[in-house]
Image (cartoon, rainbow, N blue to C red):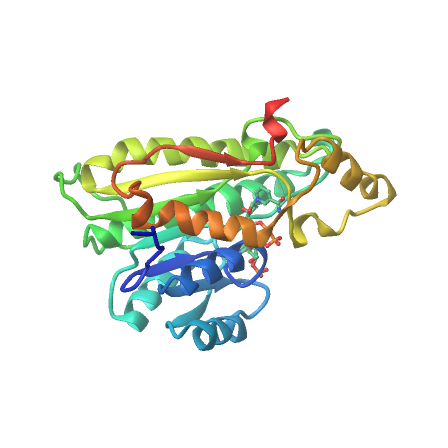
Amino acid sequence: MPIVLDFSGKLVLVTGGGRSIGLAIARAIAKAGADVAITYTSQDATPVADKLSKEFGTVCKAFKCEVSDSREVNTMLAAVKESYGREVDIGIANAGITLWKDAHENTDDEFRRIFEVNTFGSYYLARALARSWLGEDIPVGSSTTGRPEAQQLGKQILFVSSISAIVAMTPQRQTAYNASKAAVTMMAKSLAAEWAHLGITVNSISPGYVATDMIANPPNEEAKAWVGEWTKRTPVGRFATAEQIGEFVATLVSDSQGGMGWMTGSDVVIDGGYTLL
Ligand SMILES: NC(=O)c1ccc[n+]([C@@H]2O[C@H](COP(=O)([O-])OP(=O)(O)OC[C@H]3O[C@@H](n4cnc5c(N)ncnc54)[C@H](OP(=O)(O)O)[C@@H]3O)[C@@H](O)[C@H]2O)c1
């Protein structure tokens, strides 16, 4: 029997699913039969969701959500549940931003913003999902009491981290981004350890350079030369396409790879060999 990706009956949530890597993930998973909720903040992703629905015959909807605001994340998740009438099965924290600036030039606000979106945003999503799966109706700003009983919820969380969590990328200077992603990778491991007994797996992927909006527009003349340098430093000699990452993620989070419930706390590097050298 061939191995097939089959997400029928699953509801998958992808933050930043309206474009680039997030869209490619949403697309690959919708193509394999999942209903997909995508979030956006600056560009209304409703037309994108409608297109996915038409193309694959699954129910895809867009929800506005600024991931650095925990209230918005909680409200968005409540709206997703109400709209679909069920819990999310797989949550993918993909939304992220970068900043190319020397560390000594970062303002407090700039440095904080990178963490608020990349790190806090991933945490807010994971926490909202876990609370929802545990059936805990907790007011914003409050904490729960006690460690939940062991159970088999059969849910998954995936963080889109980066190889910047592992190596300090150059020639650009991006300490805030690198540190924020290192926190994301470690957070996946920590949450995996905390939630394994609940049947919630938490993993991260660490892509190398992917041809998306994030790296498409170098801010100045110096930065334009970086593209050649990044390619040279990637042993396979090219960037990934967003579609490659999307298909890869769909395989990773599918039941067919056997990882569901067993692979947890792993960081999967997909980088064209960048971190080999
Ligand atoms: N491209 C790469 O080479 C690369 C490599 C490794 C890891 N990554 C990681 O992969 C993820 C996706 O990157 P990408 O290249 O696809 O980036 P991108 O093209 O810049 O797209 C960023 C996505 O994140 C969303 N987003 C940004 N800030 C947000 C906020 N404050 N609240 C909610 N959503 C927000 C955007 O939503 P809107 O469309 O509404 O603006 C958009 O969907 C990021 O976490 C990034 O760090 C990228």
